[in-house]
Amino acid sequence: MTFSPNAPPVFFGHFWLTNAPILQAQNALCLDYSAGNDGPLVSYNLLEPAEPLSEENIRVHPANSPVDKRPST
Image (cartoon, rainbow, N blue to C red):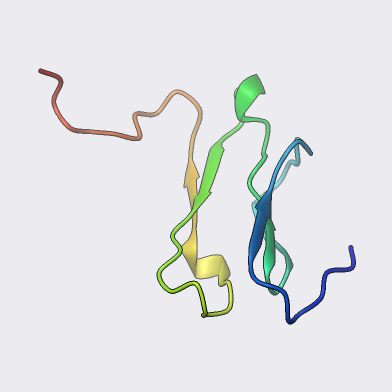
């Protein structure tokens, strides 16, 4: 994948990747890890848009796990 290192961060999907989520480039991350087929839901904790992306901020939410743990009303 070729993506300009000077471009702003981009998050994309529709690739149904497998294995552990990793950055595809220093400013590109695929969030599609087959969540529609019992794979994990992947998100990114973007703290500061100007900072480079970091694998430490990738969040993996396993299939069938509650993401929102607030009690229902």
